[in-house]
Image (cartoon, rainbow, N blue to C red; front, side, top):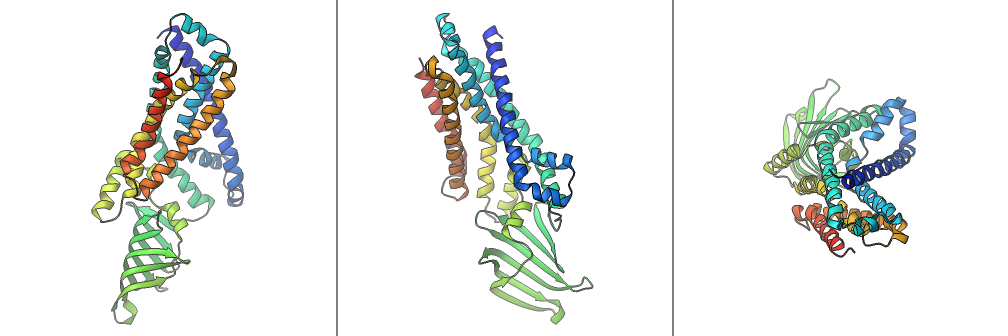
Length: 353
């Protein structure tokens, strides 16, 4: 590794750490004040509360923006001190500088993969457990083999699949008990929709064991259940709590059972594609920095960096929403933002002075 490579790497990593620490600090403060009442009332220890806030933080999602800003700040300061001019005068090309920055992008590409595959699933599950069992004091809803089980007032509900996009549940079994915990009624339903504050169940088989075992079929039935879509959404299977392999296997499972896996397919492809953003942002940051004059480099770089990161995140979220809603192929939904910004990065590099 040359002196220039070592210098650029050290500077970018230094500013990356400063920027990431700043973002994490702001995130924790805002999140803490948003949920502080719950933790104070629950009597949760400071260490557990701190672990909860840190473990639920989307650090992997912060990394690409931090890479972009750290590259922009590094080159902005070098421009301000005429170091870029000196390097160009010595015959150092833009592509030589890009080589070092791409190495940093590849390094953080690997970091995101390690975080999302090995660290985040464990910490997210632990954070959800702290919230449900210790902070909110709710342990009635649990996951077992990716199915939802909910213990209510003399009832146990089993849900095979919950779709958070349209607030529907599928594969529902409701068991009702008497005071001796004997089953007195069972309802099996293909699908349930939450609307007007109630659950509407469809294609229902109802069995009443306390009335001679009578069996009744319903096309539609309105029932009051012990849970809302928001409560289901908190306990339901989340893509970030699974590795890519686990998510792939879960998609195959719900597909084989006849449920719509579109939302999870979008999440699966985004898991595969998202880490490449670090490499793309390193290209974009280098191209933007080397196109700006030395006098205005640093402040303009920061503005461009924040604007670029914001535009990417808005467009990325928009495409994922289109994919989750079935209006865009799941693979394209995850891939299009990266391809668009990669083209933008290459364009800025080719047109840099």
